[in-house]
Length: 319
Image (cartoon, rainbow, N blue to C red; front, top):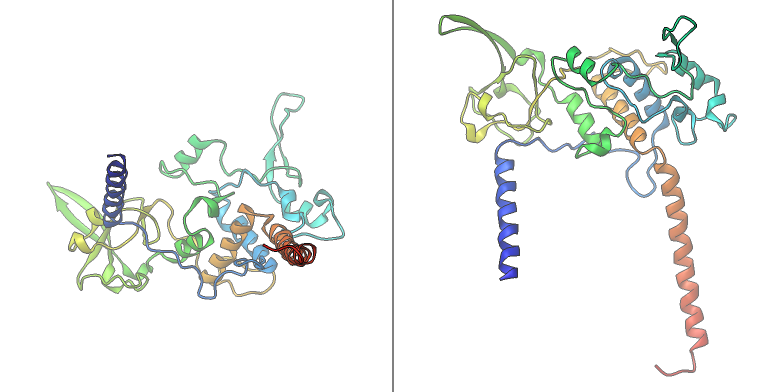
């Protein structure tokens, strides 16, 4: 009886999983074609890419998204994007000091007249938050709360690939069409997306004349988990994957001018900021892999030594 209940529970879970998948779901995040340099047992972060990714975050993302788990000094720690061996203490790194000073934060103590003043940040300060609190963040974003990006690659299935695909997965503006219609005597303005010309859906094949109605203040993205059936103008059984989110397309070619001269295409900026966020979510990854690899080599040699010792010591004893 107990075995039967376990099997029944498992089949029920699978059924609900199937329903959830059928209801929409997001397109699988594959990431860049060449993969990520930090993958694998010997993978490392591309320091130049992480540096550019910080620039993208600073100039594009930081106006809405904070990173409250990071301090500016983390940028100069060993393994960080701006680490300098000449400054083992990142608080002394002049470049990190300059990066931090570009941001103004509220002084933790009031001045002589009881007012809190703005001051340049120091390496010891946390990353500046774009909003005073969650209520202010929602008020500035139409009720949506921009997620903190400190560990976003750990919190989302697909990690850095999810970030990369989400930023590059929006439909092109040429696929949008504004429509005006009359509903119960009132003028209704709608924005629809021509899904038959959207080429970022992989194996999904939309109907020839299908369109997707985009809600006001929301933006379609195939990599955003959701359910598009209520907004799909075709057969709901063939609704496109993905869902809607409050953040519109943020990257356009040339939006950031890289200091190292790299061409700032949409895919390049998405690649760099995704790698920066991967580093932010796991800044000790490279050191951990180095220690782990050395430990595995040591244990392998120890196992060989123990095997020969065993054969030597017990060579005259029958087993």
